[in-house]
Image (cartoon, rainbow, N blue to C red; front, side):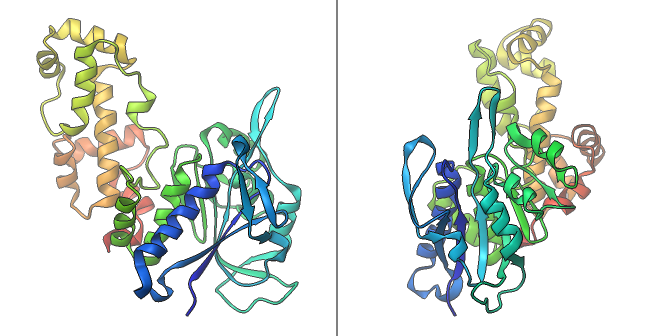
Length: 345
């Protein structure tokens, strides 16, 4: 049985990492399986408007193996890489009408069956990286589905396509056979999730280690962590505390305890922390604890009381209140919504 065929569709000006990130993941997976991998590996192809050199963002050229209109055989995974246009009023998603027409007219979501020259191209699943979601939406492939894209183009995607639900915060989203990911590097997270869906979480984690990925982010995780969305303090005592907190969430993190650790009086500490980070200590700690709980809910098969204690909530009731306040859902509902079946493998 042949390898699974992965085709990445790209147009001129494609974001280089949108293109090469998924290719590297699938290629590395095949190398990881080795000569004994059999049909577990992947055959990767790049399809452009035509065969030959394709200019990417930043001036780098890649070579398209073939033109997308030449594709007529069954495809396991079809990935649309994103590209953008720089205009006087800002950066917008680039949508190639020819690619949209080809997707609309030729691609059909179906099990792998024999394709016919000039007929529909059967595809088992379709994915997009970054603004590639705009292309899928324009082709009608996201209608009635939930999707994500780069945070900077999420509002435009929602406004232009009210027929779909845009999750502007997710790293990647799966809705049936359609997968969409957020900006640039998240194509790697998406591709790891696709490998996990094919071969199990254990293989994907081994692959992530091979790629020296610091953290394989789950799809439900926010595009930005608290460490990125809140300011890093200039004052050394507060900055050291920020660096210490993520690994010590199950401890006493009251203002009094944190102030003592920072060597500052509680009242002065609370004022300094707010001025330095833009957040009160309590809100900051809760955000970190919710993020930690999100990861555990998706990645670990453990009871909610264990998750609550491990993240410093103390009780399931406190965990519920924090999730309802920050995410609008219960922890159990969040796990059911975002946990991949492969996570328990």
